[in-house]
Image (cartoon, rainbow, N blue to C red; front, side, top):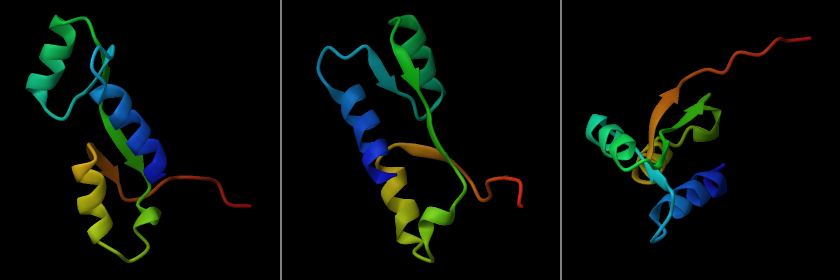
Length: 76
């Protein structure tokens, strides 16, 4: 999962990229005004934390600003 987050961040950070990573309302407005492709990264399900809350800080620093604690799926 960390690799996917890094790929999106890298894509948005490249000079001349059509993508822009949004982390707040100002970013969304700037993205709209410059006709870029906006991305607000989120993770559904916090199982990747594996009892290590330091991973929250890591993904936040990488641009993930939406995190749900559970991911719903049907059991068997």
